[in-house]
Image 1: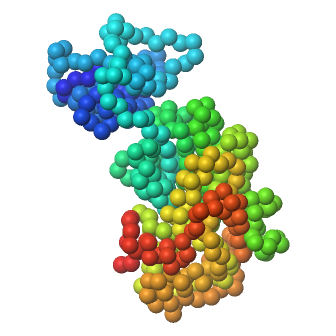
Image 2: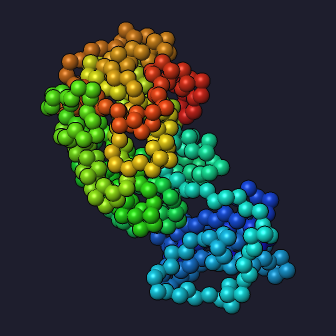
Image 3: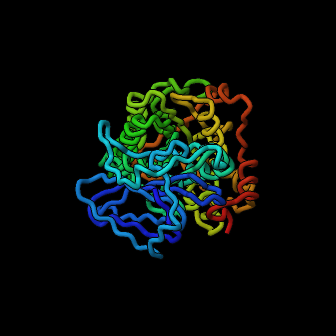
Length: 431
């Protein structure tokens, strides 16, 4: 691991390598931290090595060609050596069992760092948020930034690029476990939070194979790879695993975590299937069922955004009187992190503290924002907008969560909207 006074761009034009950069700049806040990426002729990724940062790579294929585009020439007098296996830096190398890496004499003779010669901040845990560009993932990234002294938050996106996030497709992950293995090899997270999903219920009916790949198979592939590196898996599920009042007698107080699941449509089926298989593959996983999530987000797609857009533009909006449990995304993120901190596993219902009809929810939001409600229309049929079956009056009981987190109270609709307006991020709520 040898730093230079100039920066360089690393490209693997033939083969496949595990490329590592270590910050050796003593005044940097990330001094002695490392990061890795898998570079190959297939993925066409490149790694930039800043000046005065250490660099090394491990080959993952038999034949490899690596090209450097660098901003200077080799100057031996400015070099500083770092042993590739120095325990103080603790770089992870994906060495196969029983394989001894081929090292140069220079690598073998590099010195150890001594703890009494360097000032190093405590190692921070790495949290990987799959789907960090969405409303749940975005709220998690926001919450994790407030804990940056103890946790490094690394996010992924699929179709909505975000600066500093990694591109990752659950559809590709469902087709290939190697895609999952590569991501976890690079990031080495202690916790993986899977927020992304194929949530469009009508789309799931039209593309059931995609729904299975994204909502179930990809989750299991991630869990298999997570188990190998001893990472905690957190998976968001849905109230759609239940049939609601049309197909069931709802227990007093709502469905509990142990209530029988009978999903009515492909979306609910794939999420329920993922729940069952995940706990078989990774028994320590944490599964969080939630409902009617709203709050600030970049994409601006949730129910509240749709409501405000329709009402301010004078469009009719037809809603039903089916009951739901609206959940503010910042409260959902806070509860998630608290359950992780407590080492919880198994299934929890993580929803807001209020149950109400969808129409009442809309009216309360409209009053908070002082928008016209005359265009709201009432429909009796829960499936008014499509032929896809949707559960009616699905109320999730959150007693188990309340017992686990007795000091936490979710904000009501009015408090949530007030917080949103005061601390807005992403797409503005009002034009």
